[in-house]
Amino acid sequence: MCLLTEEVGELAKEIRKASKDEGLITDLKQAKDSNLENEMVDVFICLMGMFELLDIKLVDALKRKENKNYNREWE
Image 1 (cartoon, helix red, strand yellow):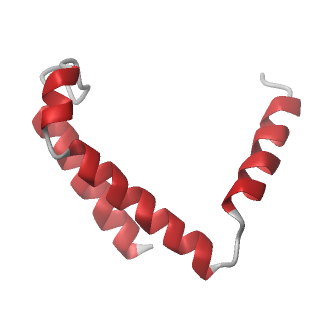
Image 2 (tube, one colour):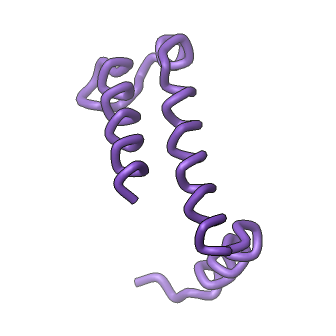
């Protein structure tokens, strides 16, 4: 979890560097030319590692969550 938090921090830093408008990427070309893609992949790799360590099947968990959200009554 600590490693994931570090990677999310690095992603946030990269988004800030690539952004021109209060933390939101407005220039997609600039974002693509930045290290943003690599930082997003690092976050994904950490998440995948957590799924593996906890023996959670990502696709099955995603399907369950999507079904739960679909059937949820939103207020």
